[in-house]
Every structure is written in C-alpha cells, then in structure tokens.
Length: 119
Image 1: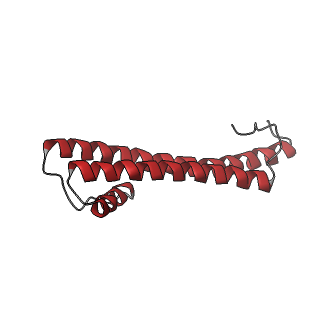
Image 2: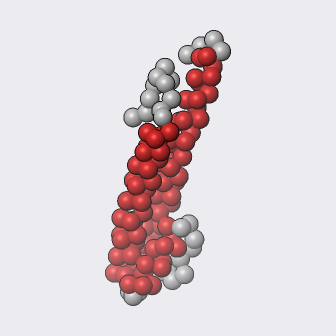
C-alpha cells in the first residue's frame, strides 16, 4: 500500500491524495456507524430519531450515554454498540495517523540512506 523505504518520498500532491483517501474512509466508517447506532437506540431503547442520533453521537464520541435501556435486549444491543464504538474510535485514529507516521518514518530512513546508513 505504501512505498518501500528504498523508493523516493511521495510528492506532496500524492501524499495529500493519500490523506484525502484516509479521511474519506474514516468519514464513511463514521456515517455507517452513526446510522447503525441511531437504529439501535431508536429500536431497542425506544427513543425518537433525534434522541437516538444524539445518543449514537455521544457513544461514538467516547462519552457516556445519557439514557440507559430498560429491557435486556436493549442492554445487550447497546452494550455491543458501545464496544463497537470503542473499536471504531481506535481504528479511525489509526487510519488517520498511519499516512502521517509512514511519511515521517520514510523521510527519516531517506536521511539515513543519504548519510551512508544501512537501508
């Protein structure tokens, strides 16, 4: 997916394109997660669409939910969504950080190669 350390550093335009793709992927993941979370809160906690959307936003934003479900099904589904939201949060951080970290590490290895270090 990324260039090998023996290859030259990507141009800024191609690097910005790589960042744009990473951002688009994370935006897609967030939108799908918001739709799923809203549906879970609407169906299993019996909230209005607006309240369900707010709850999904809070959970995906790593904040505690304001309304707790009363039924066992609701507790199970909301619990699964909360665990899913934690996974999504860390995945999004990784997806957004990876191109930047790779570029930094690649640039450092290029500097090493120019100074005669092992490649």
